Length: 124
Image (cartoon, rainbow, N blue to C red; front, side, top):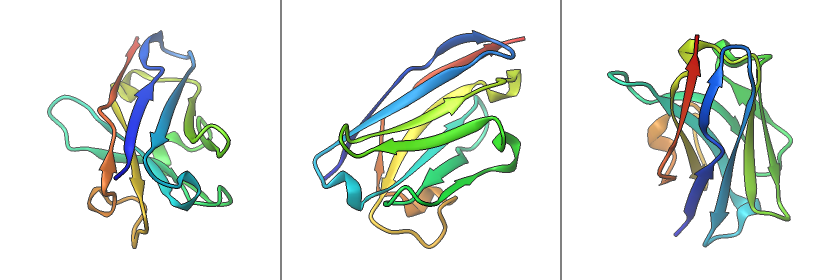
């Protein structure tokens, strides 16, 4: 079993930055692929980005490319989502997820473990 705890959400003005953290426990962190998803009110959960177990490959949805960066720290068992140039439409609950393996890193169902989510609100 894997436990994931997100932190770092909050209220920020458009154009600002936030860094989300996701601390993992319960399994060998270095064996897990990690993903970030978000869900806005009335919308389905959507893929934001992912990083493979080694940290050598990262993937992003088009709307955040160039603004968001995913990284991981094996010593801290933590994955980060650095968000810059935030827009109103980035407002959502952000979820961290972990997968032992995936066929499609952007698919919700490929991730077996989920955090509780952290709210990000961007004011326009």
